[in-house]
Length: 107
Image (cartoon, helix red, strand yellow):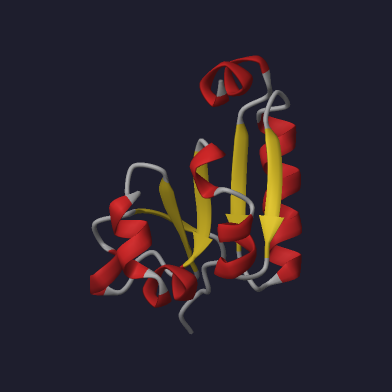
């Protein structure tokens, strides 16, 4: 029944990031680029867990949250996209798909 319900509803994406502005900005971009999806935002892993993570197609997750909950996200590596502030994520996140949400120029 769960699978049938998911087929008839809009695909869901999750953004898990304590940075509210980054989260809202990414949500707006995703909704503009892929208007058929539903994007839900969470400030903590606990909020995300309560929402039923298995119902989301992909997760966009802040690097620090991935590192703090590495076991969960490693088990769901195909769904996880790590949000970083650099093009060179820490060694422990290299197995994940990464997205540099904010790159700073070196002086």
